[in-house]
Length: 360
Image (cartoon, rainbow, N blue to C red):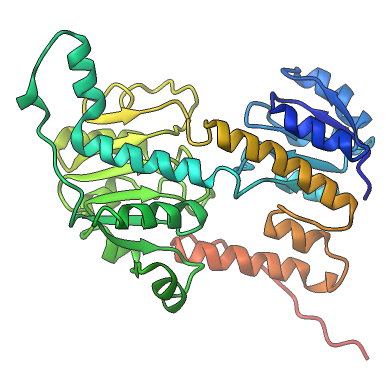
């Protein structure tokens, strides 16, 4: 696969264009295109780079794959705006930049937790309204409190490290990490979800939005939590059931919420956004100068490396699907990965497999 012509469909830092062009790759900058326009432009390019604004659907992938399109580059972490299944079926590679915005997202998570405990946005709004209402904003320290981190990848681990420095006890859950490895590396106590719910003063989610994690925090799980638990989501909308959380805030079962992501963006449901116990921001996790520069340069570097024979930033299931060896085992490997992840998130999807006799 040789990438010689790239379409950039969303606004991105100039460094991305410069790096691609410096390596002999032709770049077309066409942002805010309609789907009809994309159906025309995608087949004329080997690759397309998107942020989160452009949705690359099955229909668009099939149109692009009918021409030159062989790569979709996501300048960011989540690929939920790309139909990865359709891309794989059409032999179109999907790349992302999972490390580029980790620090920014982790810092925002910590900011929201600290703002939640000290009522910073509400106190600021009160001051701007001409009030001096110190007694209205009695806060609490995070020192000695228990923070549960669900998902201990790059962002979750960085959040844990930063808040351990504040004296928080950190417990966590991640089905992909062994207790021995995580305990040694991060000093985090790994527990089951059923063990986490009644212990956590704060719960922050850092998992992908997949069927197994959708509505992971809901009325049933909130009822198992410590009274007054605070819920933080800087991952993906839909992991926490927003209506159930609002009900818990109203009853006092939940003591606060801090959200940067929502089921719909911008959110049409205003119950959480307008709740006095909630702090909400408009999906700012990666909105720093530093992160924007990193995602721009990293996606360009990944494309350049692909031309040099090195495949970087590709979701694991696509690596398996595009590998040339052991094709007879690819489907079973993908299904086993999916089942392992679903098993630990209590959402098992059945699948069928056939074992073939060894060829002689």
